Length: 164
Image (cartoon, rainbow, N blue to C red; front, side, top):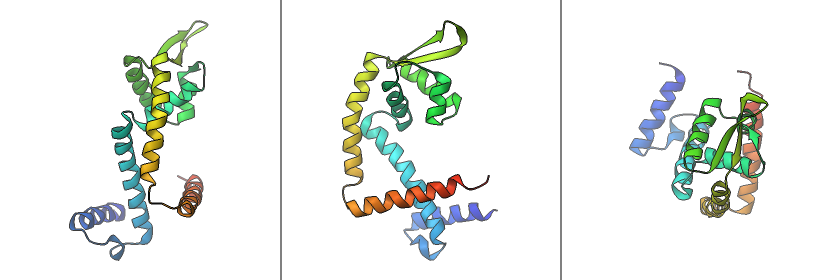
């Protein structure tokens, strides 16, 4: 059993029992656990509140600001693997929010654009997203928000510099 899997099992056990995790492992492990938990819960709650996943909303938002874009360029901008982008676009197309077509000069390229229905969805989602963020940060002071932004930005920079 690896150290990481042992820590994970310990985290799961402590949460089930209601124990304080910090007494069992490092602060670093607790921070990682909390970040993973927040990320997971945000995704689920965001979709439940807005009716659309963060990934799909990000795709629609990028399309909202572009007239038409190639699917591969869109994939690069959202930094999601191409299979996931294709899957999301297929579902958005089935709901009438995007349209896709082949580029006449190069049949290998798929062009994507937002439909009127997709544009309306983006505009209504803005309000839902604002409400969600406001509720999520309801009891977090302005100073704490600034500190959180700073800490997360530094962590992101550190992660970017880790050699894989």
